[in-house]
Length: 524
Image (cartoon, rainbow, N blue to C red):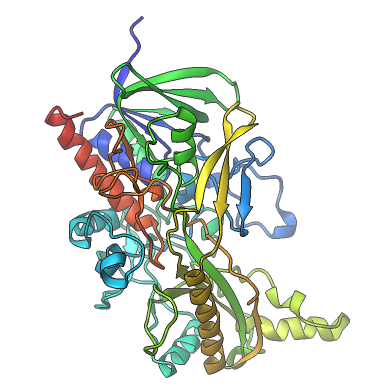
């Protein structure tokens, strides 16, 4: 029996792979889509049950089982989330969708750090337009140089705490705007409208938030040109005699059944750790030791404040759609000892939890009364700052340790750089300033050390002109293996303070067009 050969094999079905596979199938391309996890039915989520009455989860876990799939970490502590579910991290994300600005693609030319991207904002702009329409992004046009406007539906409205913090920002000369999120604030976009339950990051039960498993792949599968290999781990890419990848070796997570998927083109959309892991485990060409290097993400910090103006207010439902507003990047004063910037996302912690309780002294009736008095005033600032892409921060694979599927495990090496730490200190100090201007009864801020990456890790298979310090070219095509593309966040040359997902989707759409065009010209 002759084995089927697909036009394109896409590995990973999240923001990048799901969108890319969908676009290719709609364009007439025969696609094999490989996903390491199962489908997660949003209708079976139990987010609306009280915490004390929730039964065992009725849906599969999003993340990996660390016992089955360990990861080894060296250096400064950071968080790395690896998803094993159809739709990847779009199944449980906060949906903030921000365009990079022209300056964000030109760090070397404009700020003297890192490297410039080999593409410009202008080249990606039409794909940002398409991405926002596909994802259904809410927001407002603000004419900000640091945050380009896009294609928006009506925005979320600010809550009381956000209006108070907005007044504080005005005092300090900062701008607060409605957040830009891939969330349906109104009906009529092919999905249910948000009902403001506040469970966005646990998974949206009505799919009001963009999710490739719900909003892209069903239509792609109806074309008859997309075959899904779910619960299947890609453990190795196999080379043909011509030096091109001929197939992907898969192992099913439950049955341990092994199979090969053959294709003419392969696209890695596995995530910033898994894509370099797959390349390195496949022993593909890596002449300049660039694969896995320049790992970075966001430096983050949370400040919680209980606003004096809202203390002892009558109980009210403030759940909303997590954050409703955003404080974009700004410059205050001429003297800074770091490059880059930061922005703040507000109130994405749950109102269902009295966060103040563990920070208050005492016990008994007086303690409970104080917890209740403070609860209406709860708010938080989540700072997200730029991290410099440094060559020594990297992903490798372990020479001996293997996971439950026989695949060498990933090893992450990361240390904060001086620029990251200086930016972090300013981000913490500015958050405190905002709260001081707003007036608080209680302020909680862990200033000791930075956190990262908030699931925003990027850069380990970066885009560039020079193969000595990059893995893929300006079209996300590998320098050394021409029938392999990389379109997840690992292809980012650099990243500003903005969330990466919208740019990932825009690059996926652009790469789909590139693959179709090159295929028609016979260049793949």
